[in-house]
Image (cartoon, rainbow, N blue to C red):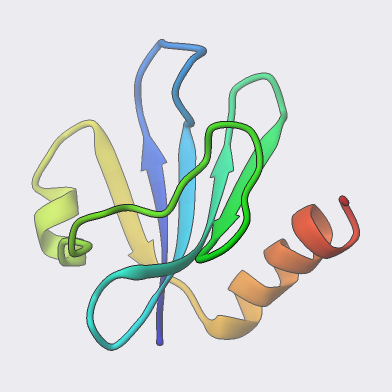
Length: 94
């Protein structure tokens, strides 16, 4: 598994400003958190989700490819960092 944390710089309240994803060996998302400017957090797995958050249907691009778009700032995070966010916003948030 790989884990990424992506900030999305835009002005819309409809779209998330931060996306945190767990990515499988096939480079598809297996779990995702979406953080919105109003403080809400959506989540998705292969069989459940919240709000409008869904797993991506395409292969997740590399960090370099994501960062080539000036609207995005992406970094690799650890499984521990991802799991801590998941616990706070999904396990304890439900």
